[in-house]
Structure formats: C-alpha cells, structure tokens
Image 1 (cartoon, rainbow over the protein chains, first blue to last red):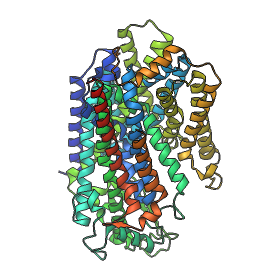
Image 2 (image 1 turned 90 degrees about the vertical axis):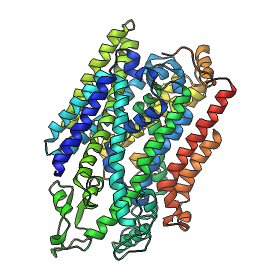
Image 3 (image 1 turned 60 degrees about the vertical axis):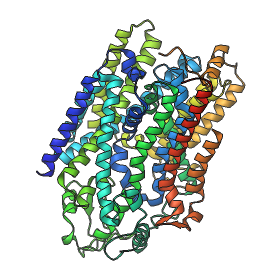
Image 4 (image 1 turned 90 degrees about the horizontal axis):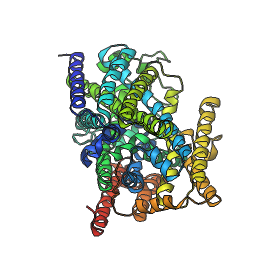
Amino acid sequence: MNVQAWTYLIVTATFALYIGIAWWSRVRTTSGFYVAGRGVPAVANGMATGADWMSAASFISMAGLISFMGYTGTIYLMGWTGGYVLLALLLAPYLRKYGKFTTSEFVGDRYYSDAARLVAAGCTIFVSFTYIAGQMRGVGVVFSRFLEVEVHWGVIIGVVIVFFYAVLGGMRGITYTQVAQYCVLIVAFLIPAAAISWKITGNPIPQLGFGGTVQEGQQAGVFLLEALDALHRELRLPEYTAAFVPGKKSMIDVTAIALALMVGTAGLPHVLVRFYTVRSARAARWSALWALVFIGLLYTTAPAVAAFARVNLISTLHNTSYSEVPEWFKSWETTGLISFDDQDGDGVIDMSDGANELTVDQDIMVLANPEIAELPAWVVALVAAGGLAAALSTAAGLLLVIASAISHDIGKSILWKDMSSRRELLLARVTASVAVIVAAYFGISPPGFVAQVVAFAFGLAASSFFPVLVLGIFTRSTTKEGAIAGMSSGILFTGAYIVYFRLIRPEATAEDWLFGISPEGIGAVGMLINFALALIVSRFTKPPPDEVQRLVSEIRLPRERAADG
Amino acid sequence: MAILLAVWFVCSYVLGIFLVEPLNGTRIGGFPLGFWFAHQGSIYVFIVLILVYAAMMDRLDRRYGVD
C-alpha cells in the first residue's frame, strides 16, 4: 500500500474512533456539558489536558522552530511547560475548590461585579477565537498535503467531526475523545523520533541520543551537539548551543518571552476549565502533574528531533549537487515547503550564511522526518493522523470554552437570569454550532492578521487573567475597581505594543523596543503593570464586602466546599 | 510552597537563562550543561516540583481529615 492509501485508512479509523467515543459519552445536563459532570479521573484529565494544550503548532511546527533557533528554542520548551507549575501551585486546586463552571464566573463572584465577569468573558472569547482559527487552518493544511484535497474541503471535514462530538458530547465527549487523541498524537510523534535517533546515534531513546555520539560518516564518534556546532561554524552561523550571541535573542528578551508564555499558559481559559472537570481539589493537583508528564513526553523529545533534523538537513544538503538530492527533497519541493534558488549558478546547494540558496519551511522538520529517516509508509500516515488529532482536540476544547462563555457567563447570568437548565443547554449547543461555523470561516479564509495574532494570545492571557486570578485567591483586599483597572490596563498596554510593533512599524529593531523586549515577550511587562495597578487602586478604594473576604479565606482552607455546582 | 516556587525560578531562569554561558563550559556526556537545563532539565524539574507539591498537599489534607 502506498502512503496515500495508508493515510486514508488510518485517518478514517481514528475519526471513526472519535465519533464512537462521542456517541458513547453524549450528555443531557448542563453540568455534563460544561464540566463533564465533574467525574473525570485525574490521569484521564491529565491526558485530555495534554491533547487540549498541544495544538497543531506544538505537534507540527515546534521542533522545526527549535531546529532553526538552537538554544533560543528554549523559550518554547520552558515557556510552554513552566506554566503548569504555576497552574498546579497557584490556580487549579483553588479554582476547582471554588466550583462553578467557568473562570469568568469566579472572577465575577470574587470581584462582586457583573462588569468584571463580562470583561473576563470577553477576553476569553477573543483569546479563544484567535487560537481556534489557527487550528482549523492546521486541519486544512494536513488534509491538503497528505490527502491531496483542497484546503477548504479539509477544513469542512474537520469542522463536521468537531461539530459532532463537541455539540453532542459537550465536555464529556470532548474529554474522552481528547484522551484518544493524545494517544494517537504521542505515538505518531515518538515512533519517527525514536527511529531517527536510532539511525543517527544508535540509541532509540531520543532524550539520550540527543547527548550521544554520531555513528556514521565523517563525524563518527563525535558528540552529536559538538558535530552540530561544528557544522554551524562551517556555515558561518552562530553555534547551535550558544546563547545570546549576535544573531540570536538577547538575555532579557528570552527571559521576557519565557515568562509571558508561562504565565499565559496558566491563564488560558481552555486549559483552566479542564481542572473543573475532576472530582476534587486534590484530583486537580494530581491531574496537573499527569498533564505535565504527558506534555513533557513530547516536549523533551522535540528538542532532540530538532537537533537530529538539523544535522540531517545540513549534512545531506550542504554542498550537494542539486541533481543528486534525495527523493524526499523532490517530493516536498512540489508543496513549496523547501526550495532551492541557485544564485551562483553552479548547481550546488550552498547553505552558508550570506550565500544561502536553500529556503526551508519549519513544518517540514516533523512532517518529512519519517521520509528523511526512510521509515515505512504507515509511519508517514500516522504523522498525518497525529497532526489532525493535535489540531482537532485543541479546537474542540476552545469551542467549548467559547460556548460556555456566551451561554453561561453572558446568557444565563446577565441577559436571562431565570433561564431553565434545559434552555441553557440548548443555548450552549446552538452557540457551539455557531462558533464552529465562524471558526470554519476563519480557517478557510484567514484574515491576514490571524497568524500573527495567535502567538500573542499568550501575551494577552498573561497580562489580563493571571494577575487577577492570583490576587483573587491570595489577597483579601483586592477590590473590584483594582481588578478591572489591572485587567484593562494590562491588556490595553500589551495589545497596543503588539499592534504598534507588528502592524504599524514591523520594521523596528531591538533598539526601538522597550528595554529590548520583543512584542512576543511584552505580555510579561503587561502582567507586571496589571499586578501593580490592581494593588495600588485597591488601596484607595472601598474594601470588598465581608462575604467576599470570607469566601477568599475559605477557598484556601484544606476543606472541600459542600455546595458543588 | 515559596521554596518550590524558588526552585522553579532557579532551575528555569537562573540555570537555563542567566547562567547559561558559564554553565556551557561544563559538559555532561554530550551536553553543554546550560543548554541541557534549557532544553531538557528544566522540564524534568517542573514535573518533580508538581509531584512534591501534590504529595505535600495530600499530607496536609490528611492531617486536617479531608480525603
């Protein structure tokens, strides 16, 4: 069987599995729809969080990005895992203990204000939509590359699947399909990684092979990373493992970006809501642990894949005559992901700095890996199914967060306070359907700014949610005026900085940036502004009512709340 | 918990970012040490931190008679 037949077979089988699970776990109550009836075991929730969290970007693009950035790639590795420590220690158990259905609901109650809740729900919807468009696009791209259907048909197929299990199964359906999707995506990531590690270093465990020695060729017996640094020197590029050298990001920028991504992760609504689905605060802590274990499995493999792919790419292509390039080069050239521009007309590929003739898209590092490592066709098909699982699971999680923000935070609590549970469930399903269609539209014809905005969703989440939640849990004296001032100033500052340097002056260099911090990292500064303003304004406004202060003390006592929504 | 957060800060920011250059002078196997912390070590430390925290809180819960 060829690659395409295998891909059809594996993708169809996984889709059938997801739909089967959704049918088996369909729900009839609002609690089931929003938080899966709070009956999800910690390990299953950890897996679901892993799939929810790891998007098309983590699966397809991250290893490639690291491959081109070398040391600096740590901003993604640390930034996207370190947030779970903050989540487990500072947020998840307390939010779970408080109960209710959404994070905005906590913000509204803690800051005794519908306005605060509305601002929080608005931020949720904005952050989630920017994110979901990228996922739908990812689905379309995987379909078009592996199955040769048009991007828009790919998006439509993806939407129908997500529609089916998100609208029918709600949070319960999503949770158990995410568990299945995690298994698919991690297997699809680890098999090619292990094979390529074994091929280059003789050790099938990528995390160890990464520090091992090269087995064959001119570099045999040299440590992989030393060989890679030597290749980079040959190309007059900064060494792979070197930090903060010219041509890489500065120390302050790396620090700011890592911090913004960590704090942003801890403040992302679709991640937070996962911790509402478990039985208790204790289960929330353990499921944060499982989530990071499952995420760490991919995140410690990715930098190894990045290094292997980089060595492979340079040693097979640099100074190679174009007529002798390997088979995979030709097949990926047709997709436009890799291209050769023979500037000096000698027919030989030159990759050195200043005379580079090769353009490589970061996505190819994961997608073409099985072919570069000469693995069988079914592994290639598995990678396609893994990419789809990563994109669909994230999309479904986001969709549910949007639906609950609209039907629960805006509909039930502000517009129609006396709505019955049955009507609310219906409204939630209708909103989810509408959101799916809007997401599909964005996926088919993405507005130019979406791709740029997705990376900044973190900055916005970091500068809006995180400080308000932490202050809400750990201080009694933060007032509603403080919280609203903090949230709006944080998000406005971050948003304005991003818009200014991305859309109005995209040509600006590090000298123009505030303290040399790039727009990706500015969320860290926005977060500090938010903290500072919330604390200062709270000192000068009327303290929160007694019942709110009691609520805050109660949340931090080691006792379960009796009134569980 | 303050101690755990301090470890979180030291392992990720201090070892992985601020001190990466001096640490890269040392090698463990094929890894420059600072680079290893940035690309691998910090993630393992994060997992251990949550494990320690969850176990500690379990003990606290039991002392106060909560499941």
